[in-house]
Length: 611
Image 1 (cartoon, rainbow, N blue to C red):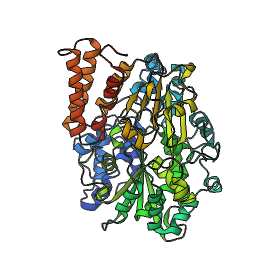
Image 2 (cartoon, helix red, strand yellow):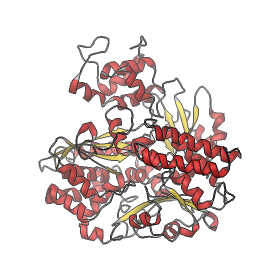
Image 3 (spheres, rainbow, N blue to C red):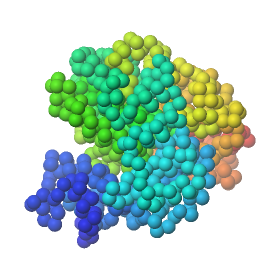
Image 4 (tube, rainbow, N blue to C red):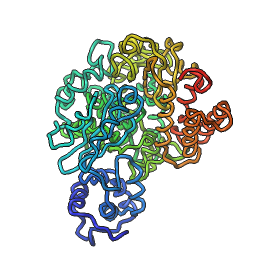
């Protein structure tokens, strides 16, 4: 521990979250160990958020005070604080503007906005280039962090077209509370063009219809009928319904949800946990954000059903740090669910005990990987764990854990209310139900669209109005940065899990990013390579070194200075990609070369083909 001491404001920020120091504390410090210390450690991420939010950065003195309150070694607390992009251990202005320059924003004026926003830099504000902020349908966009008592982050759901839009939030003007209903009206319409329309909608049917802050309105539109049905069926019956519906995970891995829940429910070790992975950080993905902002009670209900089914009394909802409105909506929904008896010691007065704790990430793409997310909840650096053991037996806190993403959990509700057979009648034999697709890039009407599995890529794009200006697409990125590019010759492929496996493409997290004929594919590949280089946690050598070597090779090819010939560099890229796929600990390294590899193979980049 250094001699640096926290200021009164820093102490107040920490004590507001943790409560006053214990009476037996000496200079705020009480040494604790064992189970008690481990319980304190899990509060590290929320406490760092409290410091960052109040002061605007995490000083050495503030970090010392956090370490003493939580009995965390200062070196480990520093390691966590420096792991996340939204935290700073160097002093900076209390207003920080994150301008997105990732794919969707990049092709819609993001680079120009970032360049022009430089005039806002100064003692009162800092401008930072940011990876995808999950607002791709409104590109270009920005996220503003404003530190201080009573201040909060605000996402500028663009299109942000000039620095003047950003300058508005630097001053002291009041920002509407995130839970206000007016904000929902602003976000839902353009973001979900199909919201609430037609009987063929399943997940979107309440979006734009139900007031997202009203539990009474949610119940009036069928809310909590699925939970009541689950309790009537019992835990085994609930899992059987999910199994019979053939629900596959919507996060990219497509693992059978019923198999996962069965595995956790049968574990003799207790306690069991359930987690909603809402750390939606894949570039081009924003469906979970829209559902959390527009229908938050549905997610809380679905997570409660998962907890009941697997025998868990505690659930965690880990949400991306860049989603301030969704965070506020979920915090409100959790509080309302407790107040009305849908969470707590006796859910629905049926002897079911279950509660949910919201955890906010802090800007780390890697925390979307399930084991990295476990470490983050536990107050550690968000680095992946080796598998096996798998989460079913050794999840968060080393206990059996069922973890699903937002869209997967939301599908549980129609399965229980309509029945497994009715659910499975939609889609295909191997891909049941509907799917949410995130349309962005150069489409006429970007947003979230719901389609039955089996729809073709062309039909999905046409539903969004086709290519902006009536042209033909040059390329489509499926699945996000970890997915792959396809050309216009593949517009009639079916979007199902089985077709994707056979065809060598991916559905991933539902990204469909469309690019017109003017797009610079080389620039997109460079941006994707930089994204993975920046987001690699650095824990394993194949990913830590491979993502850097991939970007270096691309830059050499662009500059016309290859090592050997261009063909030699392309062989090197393939070799590096194969090593990352074979030897990386987690999916980040295993998929880091996919998009670049597909662009080179499909469009003949660097060999005289398209650019």
